[in-house]
Length: 86
Image 1 (cartoon, rainbow, N blue to C red):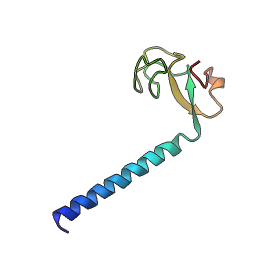
Image 2 (cartoon, helix red, strand yellow):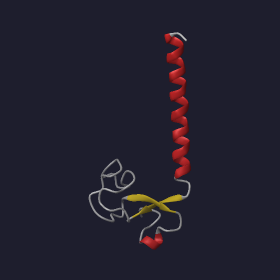
Image 3 (cartoon, rainbow, N blue to C red):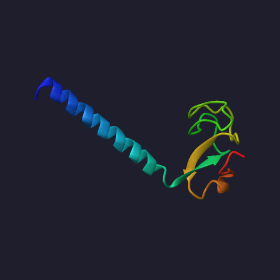
Image 4 (tube, one colour):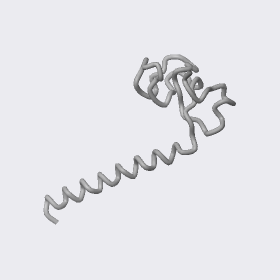
């Protein structure tokens, strides 16, 4: 196999691997729901609904009602959280 063929093959493997990873991530969250107001400081799963930060792990306060994390479906209310930031 020449150099160009090897590069093309490596690129294709990388492309298909990335696609499989995205599909796997979506499946991993299929049995979960966003729960607002239960994440401890620094343990949120994504951006705040208020826009105060833009990424996971950046919450500053425990149980901020604008920050969320994934929990098992049906458990959010039991934890004292809400399914929306309102």
